[in-house]
Length: 399
Ligand SMILES: Cc1cc2nc3c(=O)[nH]c(=O)nc-3n(C[C@H](O)[C@H](O)[C@H](O)COP(=O)(O)OP(=O)(O)OC[C@H]3O[C@@H](n4cnc5c(N)ncnc54)[C@H](O)[C@@H]3O)c2cc1C
Image 1: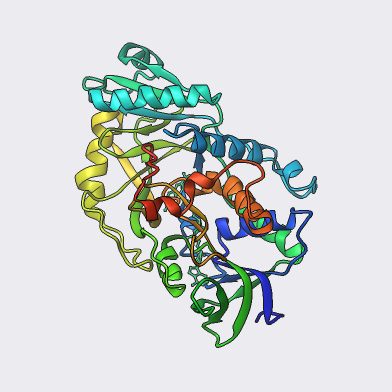
Image 2 (image 1 turned 60 degrees about the vertical axis):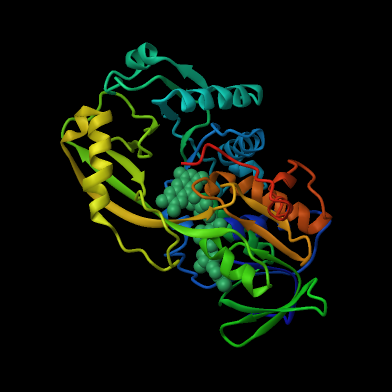
């Protein structure tokens, strides 16, 4: 139960994004307001954060997303100093196997070249590889159809996002942020509908709010509807398989993005991890976690065995279903205050890259809540206004 009847900031959803925003609010010297995080499932069993593959990359098509991941990479690797030097907080390693995009048609090869320019200009270590260079570096790929690849081993790979999440939650609580187990079910608006004045909780309690942050992942559209707002975000199913190979590869496997849409990477020393989705990819209910075994048999395994013939003999050890919060408008994040309901802030639409974006997005949200403006990275290209204007801000590199 909330300790107070009124809070300066109510954050709806306490997983990685809600916890990041809460933590960064505690780091704002000009802010001493009350913060409440309302989380419907404090076990976090069903949220996207618990189903993540927990990787970070610099290979995006837009400069701002490269910059966001650069900050993310610095943040995780220097977590302790970013979190105030607490000796209990570890620095996290990035397991730099890199992402490797494969292009099998001229249009995608052109897109990789264009993204490469953006990334290199921003200081990323991306390299383009032709078929011969690729064959020399990774002899296990079947490359008959491949025209070009893009690879980067600097700040690209797996990191332990759940440790960062735990420390943000713990740190925010220690600095006075209240986390409660409850569900926001309704919002009251001011006369004229320009502000959310109060949130109603499933327990029956109500809480007045100065500002509200929507950090509800795949449920973002439901939450926005409570404030009379529509946001183009849908829960989409994404499948993950961890498998063992009868004949393991002789070197670490980069996170390979096959032209089929299937991706696969090294998982520890012994296993591999593959991911993908069905060709028919509708919006689903946010509590639908049913596994579709046919996808593995009909799509994923054939694609893996085609690209890496050594993967003809593999055994699935573990599998799960998670949800992307999928922005159907332009596949990019939606951030900042709503233009009319001005104290309702979005922190939504992160598809498959929210974990790595959580340091920059939480920091930016805290800046916007406290100062009404960004102080570090300018995240205004992600604002909702682009949806109103019908002007997509497309991120092409969405996996
Ligand atoms: C299979 C898969 C692989 C991924 N791989 C990567 C990766 O390699 N790298 C990467 O950077 N990202 C990856 N992601 C994306 C990343 O995991 C997500 O973008 C991120 O976890 C989103 O965090 P979130 O806090 O916005 O949402 P969530 O983690 O879904 O949290 C939302 C929270 O809000 C709560 N909530 C919802 N409605 C209410 C309400 N009304 N009241 C109270 N609480 C509510 C929920 O219970 C939940 O805890 C992956 C995602 C998936 C599914």
